[in-house]
Amino acid sequence: MEEKSDKNTPKEYTFEAICYSTNYKNFSSMKVLNQYFMSAECQEINHIDEFNVTFNKKLKIADNKEIECMNSYFEIVPTKSIKLKKTADCFIIFFDLEYNDSLGELNKILKNLANLGTNDKKLIIVRFYMEEKDIKTNSDEKSIPNILDKYGFSIFDISKINLNSPEQIISTIDKITLETLQDKNLIQCDNLDDKNDKSESFCLIN
Image (cartoon, rainbow, N blue to C red; front, side, top):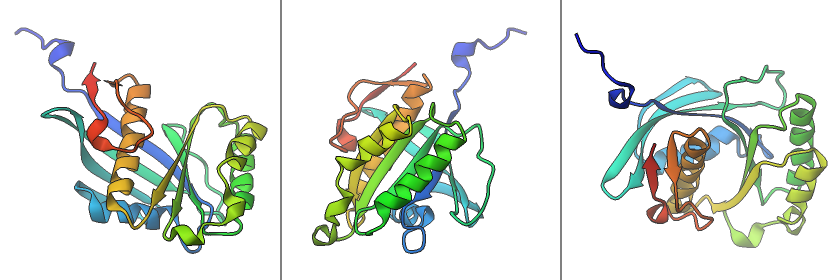
């Protein structure tokens, strides 16, 4: 019997992130992600426990072409000591722009990650808000790269979303996933930019 070639073997697309929030009490990572689940077309959402969720999501790769990715998000709780999973693709920090202590909390998170020797992992900071008028001036984007540099994080991405905009939430989370799949050499994305416009993101399957 002729063996199947590797070219005919379906690829497995997986994405795994460890998440933090600078305002865990009011806007935990899971609370922000629930906004995504309410708007995006996700399948097989499985809340393994209150801090870990997995789901399948179809992602647009090119015109009339999609892939299905298995996603896993694991939330870190500030008051609990948890061993970080080495298999995670990246860290995501949800940064509350309406919270006075977000920069202080970001410092604590980054210091902890640096002490654990995770500076080589990609770090993604998603700044979010509900009302633009409530954004705190001390949470300005110019401060964040300086803090990242202070703790030795050189591979990072910073975005900004309005939690009242389903389109922004979907495009930002999907863009993070696509860029990670590209970093893992599973796909090649030629037009992933900072516009957070999913319709302008086209990729090629390797």
